[in-house]
Length: 503
Image 1 (cartoon, rainbow, N blue to C red):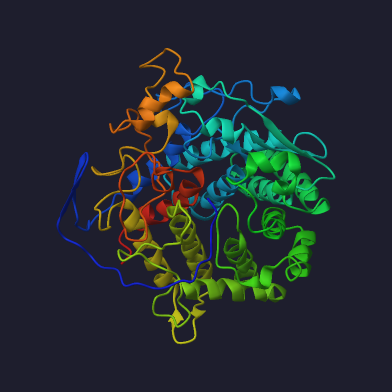
Image 2: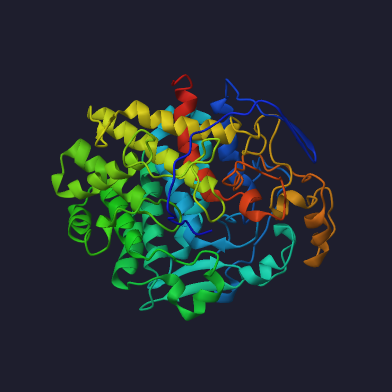
């Protein structure tokens, strides 16, 4: 699901007020005047329990899931049990899992103090389910485990994770072969997570930071993309190939290590390597593959709050990115659907809406703390303008859209019923204890019935550029949830749960 940078246009949003009927639903095409952001926050975190791999604890809240992948790592005689399935399949891809973890941790760092205590704990549990696994992936010197599961074999089956009998191939990169992207993102995830745990478990936080340092050394010393390795390419591509290059992950990893450790060596790294590693390219992307816009916002904190003017170019790029998102700005060039959703071609479009909304809110906070605005040439943009833009995206996702549909499963009365997700669409092991083999699941995949198990909190890929959504299990670009769509939305919802009346 590659992020892409097409020529961009701006469309004015419009509203429809009528009824739409299609299989299984009657959707009122009206805009809601109220959203329960606290409910959405709880559900956005709960979703991660449905994506768990490994041995599930007694307090598992999504009860239709059970243990899976308990022998992961056996090919290397090592323990790689745990972590998350990235989406609706049964593969553990390290690259998007690490990014998911970074975004969950960043959500807690920026917005955790706004979360109710129980939801903050739930968010930290969601982070730790990933970091415990990521620590295993970097536990051996000069080696990083980047994936478990052969996606080509896995995708040929429609099988519950609990029944999984496909090859649990382990993909590892050994030095001097490169994995700068996955190792750099893993360093970012562990460093960010160390900050999320510092006040509640300082010993664990120290372990995370120590391992982040080692992961970054691997990333920086052996430069290159993990998917360029012959033994990795067929497993990672075309699913989570490194399409945008590994350079951004080096800067991203260093920036997070700087934030977590305050070590000046990492400050020097992002000062001295910005040009050579493409920080000035002004790339307006942020997602599992491309970290540039997020990097610029993250580093801008030091410029705005610490007067670190040697990093001014990062802030200039962050300002430029914000201006592209403001319809009244002369440099606005983000494409919107007629209903007002940020749109980029390539599938799983809501990943862009959630990550960009997150950056809008974080940057607004950094600006507000220092009483600054963004100069977009013909207009000065205040923090409130950025927050208003984010709220429009959030409300669209939660139901204020031409379909009248919440794209978060289990939120409101109208939400997708036929998501592209194996565990959700097949009978649970509690309801159907018997083994369902690889091809035996096809009847459930092809069924027009709603999924029997509701994956509460899952945000699907979302509608097309025309705001249309057909609730079709086979249309994975629209109907498949992913962990990296949800992760930044946790922080976004925490903000609006605490500030619901922002106008």
